[in-house]
Length: 270
Ligand SMILES: [Zn+2]
Image (cartoon, rainbow, N blue to C red; front, side, top):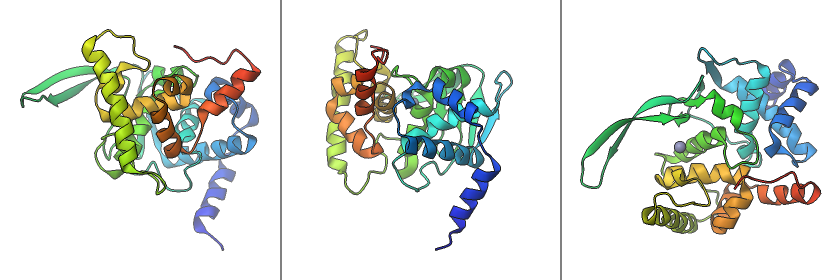
């Protein structure tokens, strides 16, 4: 059947080809893509082009944005969607704003006794409900390795979470998943991390303690680890890893283990 979408897609891809050497440089920078198949590489390359046509990147003064930098961002953004089918997972926003550095942003929190607290927090990223994503460029450039840090995936995980309402750590699950399983597994792990920090605020936790901020941050941070330090996440919270594996329909741990078996240089930070 003739499809307008498929035709548009082909036309966009034909109009915006990526030079092979440029894509190789992107792949070289993003070592957390190592080990993906040739088919997946092709998908990622095309999806990156389409993403950049769909979203507007606004660079603030101090951020130099050429095609290679744009692709670096797009390829990281697309990795989580690789096996999720043609649904428009990144709907509801059109703009990504790139700051030259971390930024201050007004925060507000009502505590258990009803007192409203306001302060300026320093952030390297933000995702607004029905609004843009903001990323500090140094954070984007620091992402893409096997280090348990990925600013792009973190903020886009918030967007996935927001697809079914407020960011609350529960993105729209697939029909073969159960909300009750997800909620139980995430809550237990969250409580464990939160408990460790409650007992000792300086505890050396297996994953970034920022995950214990709230359930939305727990999902965003564990998504970062899922793709960029799957061994650490699996070691600390194997059932969280399994739920994320069902959600993203990928197994980065298997990919990392394969890479490590072939080359000891592949280690995640811990
Ligand atoms: Zn966050």
